[in-house]
Length: 483
Image 1 (cartoon, helix red, strand yellow):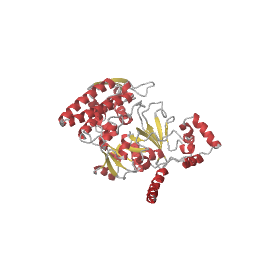
Image 2 (tube, helix red, strand yellow; image 1 turned 135 degrees about the horizontal axis):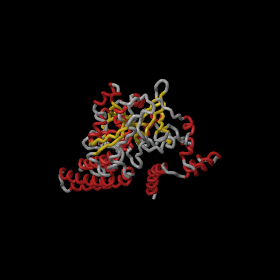
Image 3 (tube, rainbow, N blue to C red; image 1 turned 135 degrees about the vertical axis):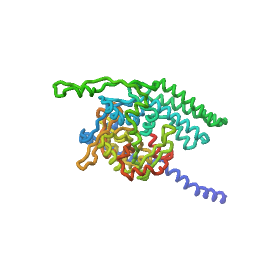
Image 4 (cartoon, rainbow, N blue to C red; image 1 turned 90 degrees about the horizontal axis):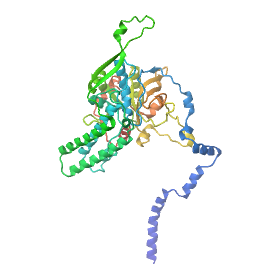
């Protein structure tokens, strides 16, 4: 009896720490009392409860002092084309790219306005992304589905998102066409269902290709079947977007410079004569005539405080076209990105950039300003994180791309705020434009595209270094794929 009792006491002594350790992580009565003590009813708290019950949180947290102190002036603005609208699609990167190129074409044509066809580029972008995905499936055919690479590619076979180098790769391979040649359709501007169907079909195709491999089929046979799958998708896309043209006739109205030279401009009421021009192009000949070799001069600069600065990085499988190189970026401190933005704008060149537009963004007036919403004061809670912490803990990512087309500087030449051209139509922001304050640039801008001629010799030389590869599951790689 004594032996049994001793054994029970010994067992209890061993198990008690484990029981206590398990209880330490629970929400128990003691912790509930602590929580209730924090929530003490006061007159101001009752007012907050009533306000939150009947109003939007953003309306209550809005820092109206930021709105009052805002001024609409920029001491340097680029001449730009009209505001575009990506509607219910994730093609911001493509619209931002077109906002960089359209003014060049407008100037060369000497016309009042010009817009490129985003539908044309989106058609080929979808096919290229599908081809890349299926090639990844073939390449990783021996990996288990639980492998990190397979999980990365299967999580999102296709999406609207993209980057400047996607845009460049598409127009170098397929050219450009005016919007009148291949206009928007309902499906091209409202892509949710089309994306879902495409992803389902690509996953089904992936399952078939892996079955073929298990059944002993060779790579040549897998690729033959893959080509049939891409042909199916071409038909699917043509039904939804229309078939892209091999050739088109572009008609536009411009000034008759000959008539202007023969007109006495001193005479009252004299007007420049307009003429209609008509020219036949292929998409590639249109691109080569109006853009030429300008695009390869652009490079990507990032501000990623989770990585070493002054280093070249390359994302693994960070391309959309199978035969193109992966995305390479030089990581620099944010002040250097500002210097290169300023140099570009002062040379009349707009700047493509990627940011987290979901943070501190007041859409009604087109305002990007740190603490434009004072959630901390409304809830008496600290929501602050550093830029590095937001990336590391996946609280922030590159969710949107736009173009910087102006800047307001101090007397010493440093930026106060930046003028941003968006692609959400004229009913959003300040008739389609946003004011990005310099502190917001610091916190939520992650990447810019500039002409490499603005770089210092030291920074330019770094693009010749061997890049550090960021695997698909790297924190910043995931952030990049969010766009």
